[in-house]
Length: 259
Ligand code: LHQ
Image 1 (cartoon, protein in one colour):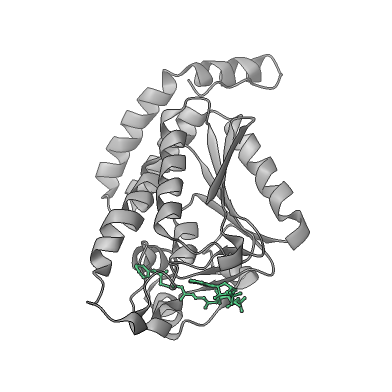
Image 2 (cartoon, rainbow, N blue to C red):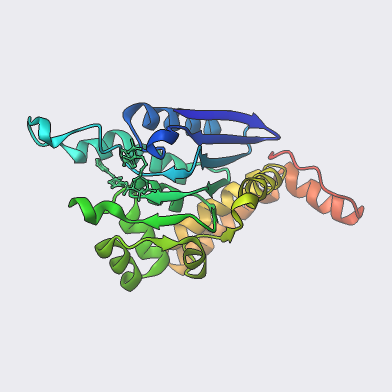
């Protein structure tokens, strides 16, 4: 349910239930988790590219999994979040390697919010983001109330979440919700080129940068300055810093190793 391929330091994870627009079932949650854990544990992985197979990126939770018409007790969706979604969201944010997301088509419900948890999001111009939860009586999960509010502020976060109105990729980019909207047929090449160039970069420093930027929202300036000091101390001792400066002085391209 998730294809996994490592090339040029980039682990490409492709959500792969195209007949269901890559909606999440339990198997796909666990396969995505295994992919992110591999990215964390395998030093050959220096960047991740997340995308979807077929015409959609991800339609959120598979609503066919539990049919209320069949009766039985109401499901405990809090438990579903705790068991399946939240671990993946936490792993993605804690992963100290760049994660590029290529949103190749519609991203609905938790599918949209998983994209917003990635570090650099590119979307096909025809892709749409839909906070579909309001249509079925749920609240935006998979970090949606966090990312939408942090990125957009309350007015736009509330309107998207309360109306479930689709947001086109170009508007999403104009609003700063994603990095760029690109022509449909250029999406995968653009995302792969970006992911490969990040993977060839000073990934130790890039990982620290991700940690710092994510911490900034809740830190005071003083705490953030202390954290920058500590992270720069680590970066300054890295082989990549020595190589970066040497390459600059020798007027050549640096060869970073992520060490
Ligand atoms: C689907 C789905 C889908 C199953 C398309 N499930 N089959 C929820 C509950 C539990 C725990 C905690 O978290 C969550 C989080 C959530 O994510 S809630 C939100 C769940 N997602 C949605 O409500 C979105 C439902 N899907 C749609 O509204 C539409 O499919 C969109 C707008 C995504 C795409 O529309 P179209 O491009 O018109 O495609 P379609 O509707 O024709 O879908 C194509 C096929 O995919 C179709 O199957 P079929 O056999 O008829 O060809 C759909 O039934 C299936 N599909 N989403 N979530």
